Amino acid sequence: MLEFVEYTTPEWRGLNMRSLKVDEAYLILKSHFSKATYLYSLSEACYSCPYTKVKNLLQHHYNDNLTLNVAYPIKFKLIDQDVGRYAFNNITSLCEYENLNYGEFGVYNLTLDVHGSCEWRTDKEAVNIYYPILAVLILLALIMVMLKIGLCAWRNFHYEEILSTVNLSGININTAGQPNRLRSLDTFRGLTIVLMIFVNSGGGHYWWIEHAPWNGLHLADIVFPSFLWIMGVCIPISIKSQITRDVTKYRIVLRILWRSLKLFSIGLCLNSINGPKLENLRIMGVLQRLGVAYLICGLTHTKLSERVIIESQITWKRKFQDLIIMRGELLIVVFLIAVYLCTIFGLNVPQCPRGYLGPGGKHSNAEYFNCIGGASGYIDFLILGNRHIYQNPTARYIYDSRPFDPEGVFGCLLTIVQVFFGLLAGVIILTYTTWQARSSRWLIWSAILALIGGALSGFSFENGFIPINKNLWSFSFVCVTTALSFISLSLLYYVIDVKCWWQGYPFEAAGMNAIILYVGHTVLHKMLPWHWSIGPMNTHFVLLLKSVWNTTLWLCTALYLNYKKFYFRL
Image 1: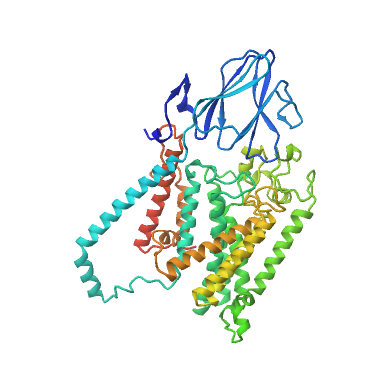
Image 2: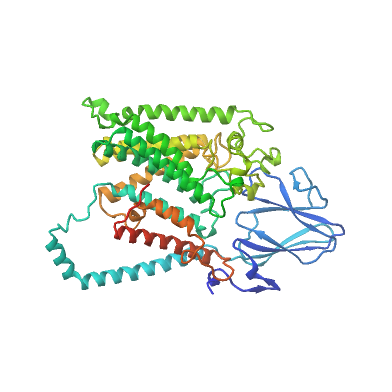
């Protein structure tokens, strides 16, 4: 009943259209040829890969149906000999097809005649997969308008009661509720955690929302680095606040150690959500990497924190005071980057080329099948073992790759670098009091890092010296996502804290209870009322509706906790 946005008919020429999943279509194969043939395909998402065999066609074989995943463009080859699992470009084919116009719930016909000639024909046009986004946005807009009207009506009805309560309490109605902290920081964190919940809920199963198969940058790929970065922003603010309250460094260090341990432990527990099988328990994860980065950056800045409260009276030093304050941390950043680069390009990985950064499997025409991640994957394999790393990386479904952990041990090096960049943004907040000085420095760092990341990646997904890659947490990925974080905070800071055009509602409340939302949505993801299913759940519309529902419900939970003044921090 909810599939009307995408489905046009439940059946087409004997084909059950309801049995198709999201981003799938039918290919009808017909062969009048006198000998057996073999169909090979290649997804555009699989960079520098060979064609993969998908179907055997016997001679004079009619009406053989094949289900295609059409999330990415596909190329086809029809070959008159079985060349094995993979077919390379030097193999002669009867016919080849690329740049075909096909899509979700379409029906297509590939016919091979008696002379070995091929014909591609569209039997049923695909549906428009972007109508669901428009439909859900309209539905959300209508709900928001109704809620706004109801809220305004309630306020008008109770206006005199509210006003008398405020006057009797002696609260200044113009200043009540104004926080001492920057709203933009909590709003940034809230936007990040809300987007994380939306992505983890499926995001409507659009390819550009989900994680990139290997190289590239999709919407899901910017969530985790943004969360790490904003954690770094808050570290110097928190440490200075504690020092101002005469908390000893010893106590601060103990708190950092304890919080890091809790983050790592909670992440480890979440990895056992499907059963605590210790022999194959995944060790690393999102919260584990947060804990490691927080530990290193927090302890380092605590050691050097006395510089944060020193105000220079020399003009030129005042202009570069943030860099002077951060000189120790920046030296560590340079050191970590150097170690990372020397390792990935200098370590000799058995049976892999030096400096290999690919996903292994079919990549590079399946020449380095077991080399996923190069040095990064090899180091994680040595430290954690094959059974304690992530078994289903995104590259597995496109490249036929082996297990690889996108939150592994080696990637922590540049994760720490990313948090240090966030820490720099926090030091800028403490050092400079005017919004112009803060924003200009954030934007300068954004431009510098964006240019570095673009140059390293060759301003492309695949052809650069160091591609943008979330799985490897590559240096170009760190630069580009950190640049996006600097820009985002600059914009939010100007809109929320400088101009007061927006109060950060409702995302500020989510940012003030981010850990509850993250753990809660992970633990309760498969339970009512957060998770539900209606029928086959095989359209973008119903999957997007469920993701938005799940995200909205957790956002409402954050608003309720904020209303009750309940805030949980590790």
